Length: 280
View 1: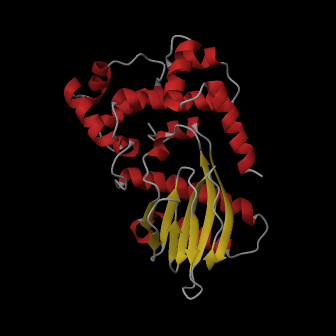
View 2: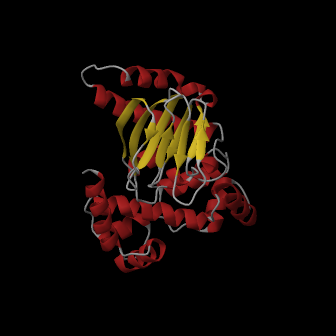
View 3: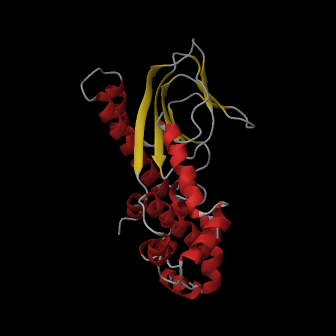
């Protein structure tokens, strides 16, 4: 089974290049409604965020901000800084456990990702061209870069915890894949532990150590992430509840509100408002 396939089936990945070339000075505050992927080709880049220490990147690197956060980019005129930037939406504003695996921001040198080199070369080449279809080509290249980044983070253990690390664990991955494939099942701890070939106590402790949350917290997040996707597609709460293992719409609404702080209908209205603002 493709361990990443369930995420791409449930959450739509899209990227849009918005800047490429030499960079100096200070960018405006970048939108809080989407994620960002910055690829530093050369020079020095400083990233500032409210109430956080500045991050200085002085080697060619990928800077991934998977969740909506306000930030600014700074560069000196003397550094010859060049970069390519894209906005990223992969269930933005939704419970996507895959992006939740990454720290904010995630910074890694390009040298640590040799498997991305051919694609990044295409990205840099296309960004410096003026060929027909350039924007579309760059958007899709950024999406491919993200897929490769997720794959590398899982296979090379580039993250310290989260579902990507869990999926790289031969035992835990079997239980996680079962939850992904059958969210409607009333899973017990014993059943999940059996999938992993472990005792209940050992499975629960190991899952929390690797993924960072309990198996049932993860299952709830996965279910509610699916619920958010289905809400945006116009599905009824009754249908959604049945699809993800809740007895009725009332039970789903209760859990949804407890976890997200608003009802499904309020969340959907808020999500659509943010989506409209981010595309202006």
